[in-house]
Image 1 (cartoon, rainbow, N blue to C red):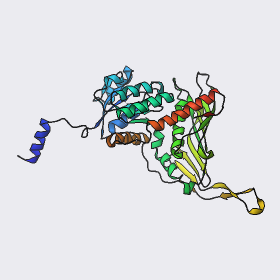
Image 2: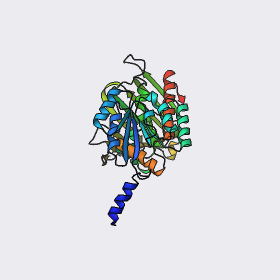
Image 3: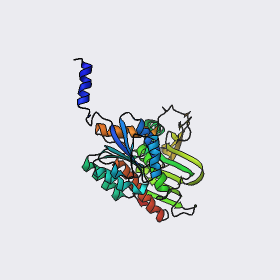
Image 4: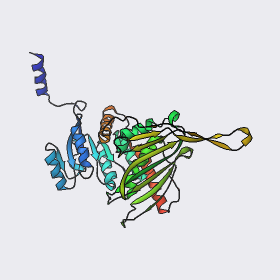
Length: 356
């Protein structure tokens, strides 16, 4: 009997693949604002099988069946459990904690959109549950998988960047206005995550103010300052009511200034070889300092194009396959939520600094 015929007969007799051989079976929970993007990426990944999509809207599920006829649809996560290995949760923020808990309790790996919970107690509980169940818990801080942000970190090595002075982020646009969280909880998680990633640190304190120019029940504009080690501060401005869309992060050090502009496809990252540092002056000016000004080139480094959402999903799949911890795991995400909670408390106190 030929080897090819034998192989085909063996496959016919035992068509079931082991968990290591078959694609990762994933359910997408939520097919609203961001869900269709996840569906597209997951459906196209060769190592993933988009097994099910869950959404409470019958109309959205009809769209799923039209686009992806082979994908099962359910009105909630419960219908998909038992047939999946992992879940991607892209529902409103207020629903995240309960859905993550439901999935982890069923032995399912989870990638959830930010934030994973709206308080630190919820984050602690989910991190503990993920550890106890031996499942991957990852949070969707997509900008950490943006090649521009990765390049920005490369440009901030101590020998090139010098001492870190401060960071500043602006994230403004006309909406979209959320119904369950304010502008801080909607937009600032991105920039807090970027700051924490660039600095390899978490803030110690937060001070913030906000206002409601759109006359809704939630703040639509906010200015927040975060205090890190060694006197480094990070300032964040977020707004749902600014007609000028901005997605920019700036880092300033003693030797270099680095700018990430997510809306500039031609020059997403620029660094300025310019800086100023204080140095002790000569002995006859005891107690004084002189400023050393450094002036150099402006450089726009090459950035390889890639899709951040795809990069994020690939890391989720690899973390499950290799049994390793992803960059944006539950503990990283908890650090972001702790900062958000402190910002929220400071806003209630009209800007009073609050310990994180």
